[in-house]
Image 1 (cartoon, protein in one colour):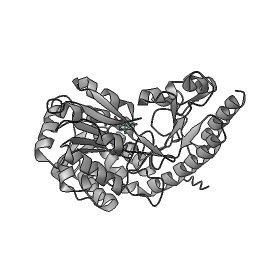
Image 2 (cartoon, helix red, strand yellow):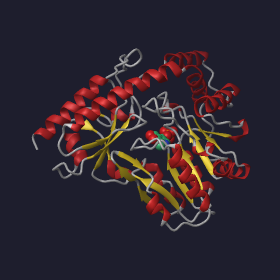
Image 3 (cartoon, rainbow, N blue to C red):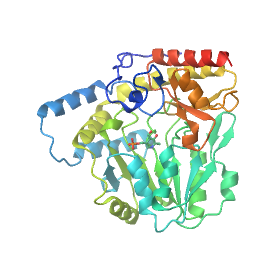
Length: 383
Ligand SMILES: Cc1ncc(COP(=O)(O)O)c(C=O)c1O
């Protein structure tokens, strides 16, 4: 089991820091493994960049640095073999607002929104914010990997211009959809004349060397024409508190509608968000590669330990630092509160559309993970 730790052993104590993750259990010793941020410091260059910007001391309005746009364009070529144009980029202060913006863009054209369950909760709530029905498509489980259920999707009634909200790689199940799956999905979408919002925020957290992230819109010009791609450095480099995300929309008319949907409501990212995003993309690669090694170690360790607990089935994520766990066989009424009482705060699967499941955040020190898994093991031993 690899255990690289150059950047990941010096972990700040986040208790009493206003951290959402740690604050939830303030005053207790519950180990918080819920909301998706990591306990690690961001790459050292990013921390230095924040110090420099703070020392400069002027916090006036800013525009997007040209260097950031260049870095994004270059990254899309280098990492995903995807050529994009500067004019396709739309900057946003976060990804949840981007998911809502996609629904707002299409609220008049779409009659409904499709999404695969389980899924990150804002996928389930965003359509309702625009009075659009949200149709849940349960994912298909084959061995221990979740994917599209094309059989049921083929039977699904859809209308032209409906919206499909795709999470790719997928939170919470960690699937990295491969070319064959994306080709088939893209064909399915185009035959039905749907639009796709493809949330690719986890695309730089692939845990297996053989896997590649294929942006849905890079499959071909037809699907690109129907797709709003969403990306951000926030998960990869642990910057979610500095909200900086972007949409990539090659279709000029769709981009115009998207911009209109956010106009006057959604501000630009904060200046520090732009600055740190550029630094992260330009200099964060060595850190990212070490992060992947560390997270893979955490994933393998958690999988091994959870595998010993009768009543739990953990699914190995191909990407992300999130692990999806089926707790329906555990002889307790509510697995989420059971583990909370045992001192481990996980995410409750019901918020993802799957009651009885749990999501564990592995973006923490190995020592903390060991402690959490020990608590879970002991609690289940007494059942
Ligand atoms: C798939 C996905 N989209 C969006 C977000 C949230 O992004 P933001 O914090 O930028 O709103 C998350 C956070 O966990 C996520 O997993």
